[in-house]
Length: 117
Image (cartoon, rainbow, N blue to C red):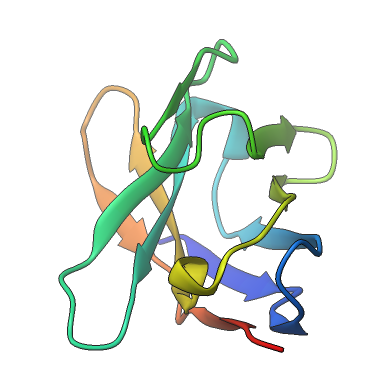
């Protein structure tokens, strides 16, 4: 069983930055591909970025160039650095973990990001 706890959300003005963190516990972090997803008001959950066990990254077109996903296997943590934030980035951001072999999937409880002046 994997537990994922997100932190770092909050209220930020347009153009500002936030760094989200997702701390993992309960299993070997390095064998999980990690990802960030978001769900805006009245919208479906969507991919923001993923990072594989080897460090390969994938980004949604809507955040490319503004967002960086990274992982620290020693700290069992995945990060999402978000810059040049826009009001349309307002959403609950969820951390996701997928076992690289068994494909077992886990979700965090989410952290709210609000971009508003």
